[in-house]
Image 1 (cartoon, protein in one colour):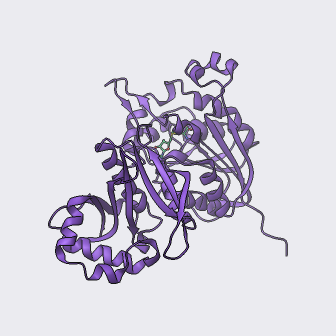
Image 2 (spheres, rainbow, N blue to C red):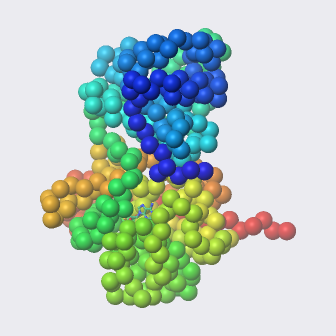
Image 3 (tube, protein in one colour):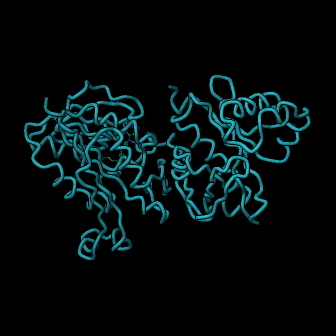
Length: 397
Ligand SMILES: C[S@@+](CC[C@H](N)C(=O)[O-])C[C@H]1O[C@@H](n2cnc3c(N)ncnc32)[C@H](O)[C@@H]1O
């Protein structure tokens, strides 16, 4: 399957009529139930109909290996003044699950924002759970409205994404470079999430002495070094050379095996090679949660435990996700985040075959805010979620 980096999304322009037509006909042939119009109707459209479509709407195409393998259109919303409507969404089967659909939706969101629209609306089949999850990741929510299609009695649900509220871009292409910059100040910026997380993850990990342990997205080695000092045999993985360099420069680093690796690729470790996995505050940088948890399940021994923490999804609704102030430029840098829900985390872990032992949510209280001043504005508001997972033992013979 192709990785997310191997495609590009571009707006179709006059002159693209032939490739546009070919991709649209492929979409209608592939998923006839997903569209209002039929392949038979569109096969006979005259050439100027395609020119007209390109002129009337912002049509986006996803290009992969030189061919158009995905489409969507962002059009003015006839029913809601000031809104735009996302339609004609299609991704070729071989690119489903790669982030291609999200890339198209983000192009439509960017278009609607650029046009000054207040919201982007769409209709999605009630049974099309994969599409619904994609739209939710991109910031859409069910509005409660919907209708039954006259053609086949199928129920369509309305979803909308408000555009006046901030949302993470979902673009993860700058995460590595962002963390390379963040490395210089990561350990010193008084991040309340880190302070909130530490005791929760520590308690969930339990005694790690003598255990093989993998730290995924180890950053500057906060967990790797602490757990190695407690007697764990730690392997720590990250894709940011800057963060890894900061970790390697710390006292105790010699006891840790550091590995530079991108979590979007399979882990470079054998099956059942770790008794514990820890991953601190990485989830918002992971697009494909299913692959992430499947790899954790694969490398854990039967009975092994994983403790995975992340910024609470409620923070995203409030307009907060990973960022830091670069002291050299004064700029606020967002390396790149994707909004998930707790349901996304839980279901991806369960589908990977992991057992869910606990889901812990934490909000700072007044006492915590006195210790960590940056938490003052978040008292009572959930900042942290931690999943405690177990690789089940095989069933007894
Ligand atoms: C918020 S930091 C957390 C660091 C450390 N786990 C901690 O809790 O202090 C997120 C880390 O995830 C790493 N990361 C993000 N996406 C990654 C990817 N695709 N592959 C490997 N590391 C990644 C970043 O480089 C960064 O070091």
